[in-house]
Image 1: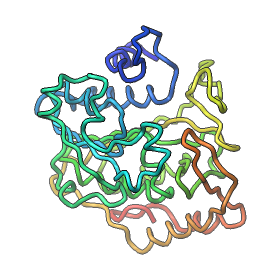
Image 2 (image 1 turned 135 degrees about the vertical axis):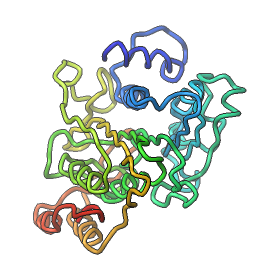
Image 3 (image 1 turned 45 degrees about the vertical axis):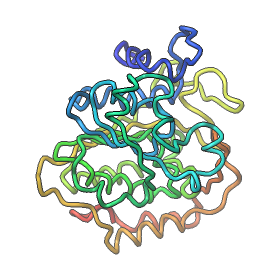
Image 4 (image 1 turned 90 degrees about the horizontal axis):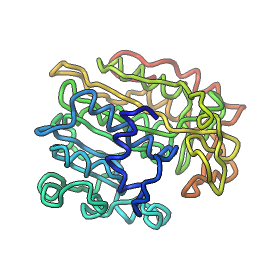
Length: 319
C-alpha cells in the first residue's frame, strides 16, 4: 500500500485497530476498500467544507464519520433491519441508525451530530427525493453485490447517478471474480462480477455521457498472489468462494458536466437481457462468504441467451 493510502488507513485506525495496538496496517481487502474510496474522492476535490455526500449500504464503516470530520455534510443510508438478515446484524455490518456511524470517535461528536443524518434506504428502490441531483458525491463499500443479481447491482449504479450534481463523483467497490470471465455467481445474496459485467456497465454509463475509471490489474506482490481460505488468516486481499477466487474492485464514475444529462431508464432490450442473464444461472452449492451466502452460478448450456442480447445502445443504457 502506498504512503498516501497508508496515511488514510492510519486516519481511520480506530475502526480496524480498536484496542490501539499500533500494529502495521493490515493487508485486508476491507481496509483497501475504505482507503480507495477516501483517496478517490480526495483526489477529485470532493472532501471538504460545503460538500454533500450520500452513502449507500454504509453498515458501520468509518467513512461517514471521516467525511464529516473533513467538513462534509453526509446522508448515510442502509437497508432496514427487518430486511437486512440476521448475518449482517449479528456481524456488526448493518447500521440501524446514526449512532452506529461514529462509534470509534473518528469525528468530533458535535460536528458529527450537525453534519450527518441517517435514512433507511433500499438500494433497489432509491427514494425520489434523493434523485434530484443535489449531492457532490456518492459511495458504497461492497454493497451492490448483495442486491440479488448481477443486473440489480448494475441498475443501482446507473440509477444512483441521478443523485449527483453535474461533475459529481460516485465511488463504489464490489466483489470481482478474478479467476473467470465466464462462470460466476450471478444470482443470490452475494454475486461476483466478471470483467464482462463491469465493462458492459461501463459502456452504459458512457452512453449517458458519464466518465468511468477502471483498473483490472490483479496485482503481483506476494500479498496479491495469496488466496485466503476459511477460517481466514494471513493476507486477505483475494479469497476463495467455492471454486471462485474473488477480490475487491473499485469503480470511479464522474457524472456528465451537462445540466440536462439523461437519466437511465430500462427499455425492453435491457429487460430482455436482464431476464436472459438471470435465467442463465442455476442453483449451485453453498457459497460461504464472510456472512455465509447462498449463490448461483452460470449454467454452461444457456449462457448464449445472455450473450446474444446485444451490447449497450445509445442513451437507454445496456441492451
